[in-house]
Length: 396
Image (cartoon, rainbow, N blue to C red):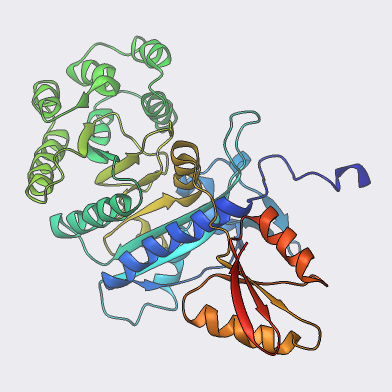
């Protein structure tokens, strides 16, 4: 297998230089905003028991999971999601803390993606979970935080709102089993109009069928809600639409009207969403860079029922977009410090002083000053500090 030593596994990649710097900057921006909003950081294991991500409860397909076994033969997975481990944490080690819990994370997730689809199997996510708080205020806080973090990074973002209750309310009126209902949900999520029509054509025509047929196309501004009300007669779907209207008006009061739209065909993959769901997009990225929503039933599974809302931001996707759109590069050091023979330690101490003054410095490991000048020129460093009995800084 030595022929694989020079490459990375499929779905994985090296992250280099400028992109590393940009990722670090984006992580710090998100962390700063979350800390200032009262959220506290948690870190969960990169490897969890398979039971935590059991597909029958979570919506994760088995083929999406990276699996392994421990030394006792128990099935493990590399963490494909951060919400479930944090829910486990809240229900066990944090159960004695007062509610609501405001938690944030900055961790890698791992998911098998179909070959050649262009997605990375290893992704850096930064996100928040507000546990033990239900209702409009909590949803508004989550959406406001998401908008502020995106504004800090990419001002041209767009947030799309939906509600799990719309699909759930309409699908309950269909004479299909859970498997058929899930197939319809997947078709709506993928906006696969042909597959959706084929499935719904086999069901007797009802107002619910007609509404589901049009659900993936209900995308746009507040006029979408008026169109949906004419289609959704069921009380659950109607209540969801009224809630979205109220939430949208509050977001407009916050000055976010230019950034918020509706996508009533937004039916997130994970089965645990129960209320508002949302995704965010930025220029240059076809996939959502942020997704989240309300999941009031998830903690029931851990024996600690409580409402919850949260979101996850794909740091790598944002960094990739900014690299492509803005051509971000790492700044070169401002100063190269060269110590003459016998002055090596003095040069290091001088470099330390200049760094504490805010100057980006690099220590020259060259043997001669001419070699140091050549290195500075090739590296884009414009000043050279020569440390001997005296110290002098010169332009290169």
